[in-house]
Image 1 (cartoon, one colour):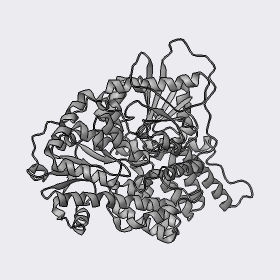
Image 2: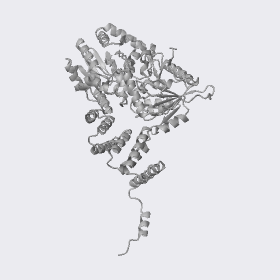
Image 3: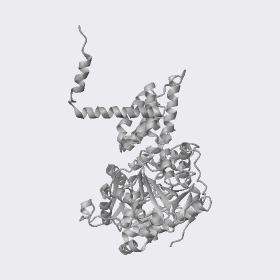
Image 4: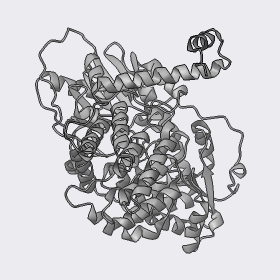
Length: 616
């Protein structure tokens, strides 16, 4: 039998036009991607075979060690390539699959891939607590909160010392008013006082009001992840006369997020004759109006979401920043690693995280005399920059939607007193709820308008009311709406009842801007003192209390004394033009003077120190 004519076959193939151009384009793209991936892996030594005589297990362990190091530095590409090489050598290595899940879940577009990886790990090691904790964490990212709680409980069952799972379980239960373990929280928290215990600092803010405890959680996390922080460079004296101070703001929240709602006015009001603004965005979720306002306010806006830590630090160094401002801390997506490596000679923690970072290279934290009085300064590793009024900025241009609605359209009674709670549900504990139910008994025609967020917690909330002798249908759920519409609906409430361990922050300013009074109780930690600072800056000090009894008594007076409520509303209306809280320009000038003072301290060759300014 004669052989096929290979030459003629190739000629035909060359002369024939592709019948499926879309596929050809796709195939070409894949081929080019594979070439790029191969080149990348060769360049970084990721395709090297194991050393001569080295066992496969030794090679895999080295690869896993490198992957962990890459992940710490946000070297996502390298980390993934290393892990996939480890899996190719040892397909049944559960740790490699779990690490791959941990890496992939950092990208919201790859959560399903992450899920596949962790389920493979679970199948290989069905009794490993850490795998179930990762499933729970992934479900949190996917906003499957009830399911996440179940997996954290499984993780803790397999290993009661899985403190990450325990902390996240408690935090998520708080989100869903699962108070069955509330009495056990003090016992749980004692376990975290042991040396070297790691956990999410943010998860504890609503669980206890203890400044020293929160400080230790931050320090433990930092010590586990970051070593040998970079010190500030010594000033060389090489600075041109009249040179502007260059400020870098770092965040992944440059969009319609609580942080931007507060500070976009500050960004726009900065004095450009004295300051240059650099914004470093490492992952904003939306390109909305707030994002555009932030972009337009900057001299330079950098999208650095795909930069590893070393690259980001190098970029900031090339930009020759004078002051770096971290807007995240331990909130979701925060990257304290870059500040440990130092991106500017002066580094400041501001606004995003209501507590200490525990990071030695974070020189300062912005506060005021109410959020951090001198007696509580010991709970912060940073030096404090004291604003003369409230530490929190506000945008006096915030828009309130013009909505033609009524109380009835929100399920509220046309008559009767409307108590409200627009804090995120995780901030609410049985302590506050007991007082609120007592108030509702004392004010018979009242209702509680309760923000439920995305979760379905109306029925659990009503059951808790019934247990306290209050008709559950007097709890009226409020759903998530656009910020300007939320501001508009607040006019239908009479009083905002604040939470204790974590006060209303942006939410308190929202309420006051919309004309809704807030009653609060100050505690010890920063998060428990914010609303007191906000109300004081609005001229409403009489709504700031220090005990649960006084909190109850002030709220009851507001509900029962129409003249007192009318007086509060009149003062609140005047605060929009008279009070420091809503003076964006005045706040910005004070903030700039404070940053200048901190930078001058560096120029003078001094170590960072606590300092403040007087009102202009």
